[in-house]
Length: 171
Image 1 (tube, rainbow, N blue to C red):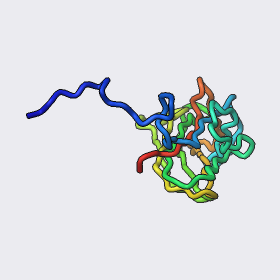
Image 2 (cartoon, rainbow, N blue to C red; image 1 turned 45 degrees about the vertical axis):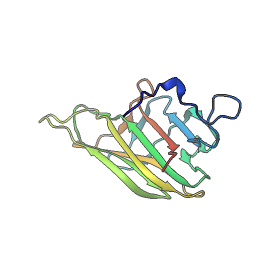
Image 3 (cartoon, helix red, strand yellow; image 1 turned 30 degrees about the vertical axis):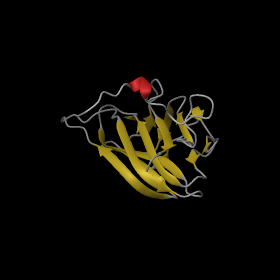
């Protein structure tokens, strides 16, 4: 027969406080673009300049070159979101967001407007679970292609252009 198990009877392994020993999902960070970045050439890949850190547990994100180098091998959840916006009106053909590992595209997403008038901004997201060695580095790149060869920008709204990563535990 099954017996009842009450949650207050489960005791985690502790070190004299309430933390579980040996468990951490660091290094971890999240950063965002603090202001709109304008005048980017049409259909050109540029590194997303996420210059403001929300947190950086182990100082592994460099907000001067916008690069995450974990220095601890493991599996990482890497994610980013951006709002590429055309400097012209409603002429975006496609927007792309890429995770780069060691200088090469690892994973990408692209968005195309579905209406006949195209769009003037598109929100794009990308994420991946990645095996990273101690010396690997990760960056985010984006592009926006318009019908009029217009310049584009990272449109900032409430930390909407962001880049983050954290080590996954238990895998």
